[in-house]
Image (cartoon, rainbow, N blue to C red; front, side, top):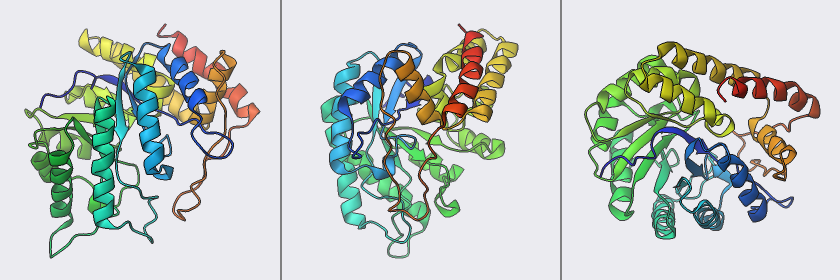
Length: 326
């Protein structure tokens, strides 16, 4: 299977809009999607993403969000859906392995049937090796099974904080890249040597490495990478579009100017989810600020709500950086 054309520039880890009771706010989500679509710089929306609090999703939430995003975006951009089985990433309470796999396959089939352009599966840290297999054997077995059952483009997502023993090795990634409908991976790492070796392992294969730490996108471009997933690909996708255009023209100074802005926005940003929801509301796209708790996982903390002072401080910085690439 060919790498889809939407794997280029900004793939936005879409922030989930919640109701006060923690349910998904469908109208608020549609309004927020309309706000994000205005930039005309997001090639693909990744729903049930890490920044969208994927570990708090239920089966019903995932199906609801897939249907909502696909129907509302309606071809104006691509949509990929996080389809891993249900687990809150509590390492003291692992999921049933058979149920976790079955749920993931069910969600993947549902997303593709709904019209999603691809599906995403996190590295399954909640599963344990069986019958003397290594963790790499487990990961290969898991993705082979998922890809055999889900009839569409499949992506791997290695989230921040993935346990070292579950992290992709170059040797494993080279094997995974040979699975026909496994078309790419996002690895959340800013380690230049690690990224280089992963890209090297799939060089020449029909497989896309997606930069998962936006502050090293410039390095990814040098390695032939075309796409990024990070907070900025939702918050400031215009700068990624400009950066890719500069690279394609051979304008390396333009690439570095864009990377400088991307890094500065990351450095100065308060809670980016709250900031964008408040900014959307200010711009005429009312988006509630309600959040959903992750307290069922003792290893995760809830996001600290943005203050008005933080918003007022960051807004001119944000608008000033965007203005450089208007």
